[in-house]
Amino acid sequence: MDLGLRGKVALVAAASRGLGRAIAQEFAGEGARLAICARDARAIEAAGREIGEASGAEVLARAADVSRIADVTALVDATLERYGRVDVLVTNSGGPPSGPFDAHAPAAWQAAAELVLFAPVELARRVLPGMRERGWGRILCITGIAAKQPVDGLMLSNSLRAAVTGWARTLANEEAPRGITVNCLVPGYTATERVRELAQATARREGTTPDQATARWEQEIPMGRLGTPRELAALAAFLASERASYITGTSIPVDGGWIRALL
Image 1 (cartoon, helix red, strand yellow):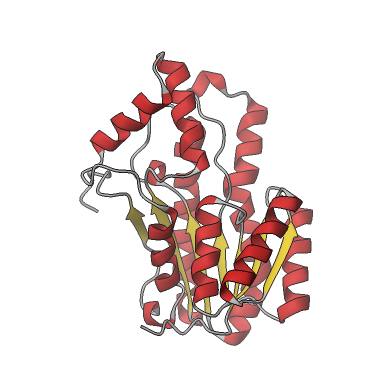
Image 2: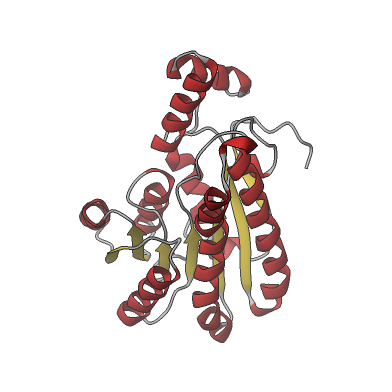
């Protein structure tokens, strides 16, 4: 299936590893040109080289902390200088610290909001003018199952990923007449470093082991296993494509059936 991504410009945040990297690799395989970022300069430069060598895609790799407006501005400016436009934006970041309500001081809430909520808002603010001018664009927000069904011990993530979902759903309505779609991808428990960190935090809180925490999650998942980053990336590529032009305002889980809600 030709997804129509060849020659498109995709900006993927937090792409040095995990879900962001898998999405960048999937786009590169479809012939897109990439701009990718992460906070660690050496890691993102290595990822850019490896993705480019494996796919032949053109890759711009830059260090950027998306929780800082100045970094977001510099990243988008560099992308526009290289490619002239951004057709597909994938907002993504690491998750905020785990823990219950009493574990998080006001400063932790502010930092989490800057990372999880304000970052996608600012990225979209920078790329939307060009998308509107061209009458075409795709914005994909990586959220998580906590946005649909709160997870114990994830007070910050439960709250702020739900906020991203509300923002994205509202933006989808506003931008639909201009040919721009906005959707959320909702990964479940996936074999990433973030989930390994959550397993360690859960084990400390419950007095068990990370393997026991992971095994419990697997028992809760109807498919009986963690997901892989590439399984989420396949959905991202489709939603970014020409084929998905009538899909907007959705939040689609890739969770092996973990979420029990009907809608």
